[in-house]
Amino acid sequence: MKRIATAVVLIVAVLALVLRGDLWLIACFAALVAGLAAFEYRALAHAGIAAQEKQAAIPLWWLLGSTVLVFFFTLRLPDFELPVLSLLTFLLFAWSGFRAPFHRVLLNTSLGLFALIYVVYPLTLIPLIRAHEDGTGLLLFLFACVWCGDIAALYVGRYFGKHKLSRLSPNKTWEGTIASVLGSVVCGMGVFFFGQWLSGRGYTELHIGVAAWKLALLAVVLNGAAQLGDLLESAIKRGAGVKDSGTLLPGHGGVLDRIDALLLAAPVLWYVLLLKDWQTLFR
Image 1 (cartoon, rainbow, N blue to C red):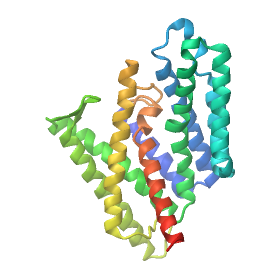
Image 2 (image 1 turned 180 degrees about the vertical axis):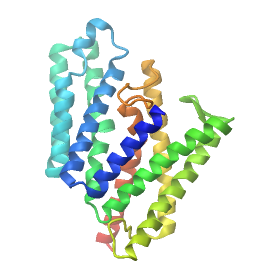
Image 3 (image 1 turned 45 degrees about the vertical axis):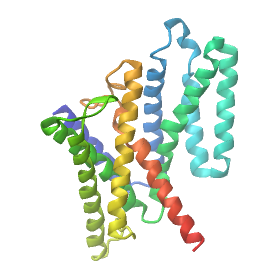
Image 4 (image 1 turned 90 degrees about the horizontal axis):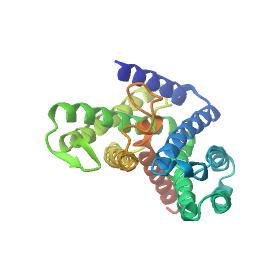
């Protein structure tokens, strides 16, 4: 019941933000989630460090400050995005060089940079997708593919799963994987056709101007990215020797546990949109 109640609250909050929230509010919420997930990632990264070295690992002030700066420059001054990322990396490199044991300088810098690439940057794409043409419908389509695929995999895998999928996550099965793909396609296309139905009645916020067969194919691709994201986060947790990334969400573990699939699926959707824009530009 805790798991269901938490899921309901999160879904309602996200739907309210996507449908009614201003872009700045969506960006602030995404930044907050990124900060919490990055904090959990930091704990996972520190898990293998000896206690006497913890003060010389990824500094919290750098991680949270970098999260804010990456969001600001990605959304407001995108031309400075890569230079700022480089500057933040060199700042951490210098801090580690003077403060960390020599054998941890390169590793600390790499772990910090990976936090920005793996956790923070993908979440900056949420407000960017929302601001894109048909952004509201596309964002709901993305969430439907990720959430419904995860739910289908959980319950089908639990009750019918017999064939193990990967050593990265022993509880995942091929049966759950197939159900996840089908769940993403069914729910994703449900969002599409519901948006089409609303458009015929004058409400165009959920309209997605893409052929149905292309969206069905996109749902499969997004599901593949989401499942890969889930598996890769499991690999990080297994390396750290923990079951969950945190305990903030009752019945669900940590924030990173809830968004691991989104961290790969959102960039995939963004790359598809960039490719679509590029083709239109050079048509």
